[in-house]
Image (cartoon, rainbow, N blue to C red; front, side, top):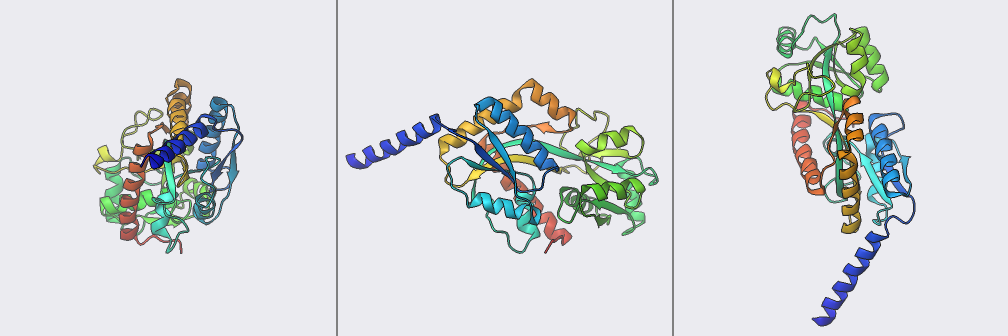
Length: 318
């Protein structure tokens, strides 16, 4: 027994020493999407903040493909030493229901580090659609079932699933019009070809200000500081509605607890800094900086919610 206790103590001391010296060199942050998207932009913001805080480079490496599945698999199979991390978004949980098979288990293959931020959408309409509130949109959709289209940046994207959740809760049939990416979806929306979209808040502001789009509601639980006069979907007649992109950091399963705790503490401090909160607000994001346990609970909740929505809608990318 004494030998076992001594061995356990030695292991704990080794882990503690490893955490105290971490990181000794560059840390790779895998983003499972191409450069230029929302997850990539948020990841680069966090990587720079961690680099400044820790004094060692946190380097973004983009591994896009299969709606995030390829890069996520690379991260899942990486050595669990804290030098390869995964920075990802909502596709991490929705892909399990959208694809017949995914090459990773979101609950078993990763250790949650911290939920960095939420990226709510804004329910917007083209001015040619004569609705000014969520209730008016619901009434129009019920009067014209299957006729009003909503733009999405691809099947299974956050805007697509936000629309399917809206359909499910409102009992309407807005028709998803899938585009090959955010840019083409925006073109279709601004042209009025697909006059409704659950548009990421970070992209919506200039078009709303210019009168090219009309904001009906935000998809977050609470109103956004950047759009204080725009109500939530929930307060507009669909209580319980909430749909946001999210951005978070994870490590391969088996990463030493002390290293994970160190990273969590760094992110919590970074996201509570006034300058970071101001940056998030300006970009239409909600700064979080959660604990590991809070992020794990968020992942479980998202898995349960979106699996129901996807099953009900029949959405698939296979």
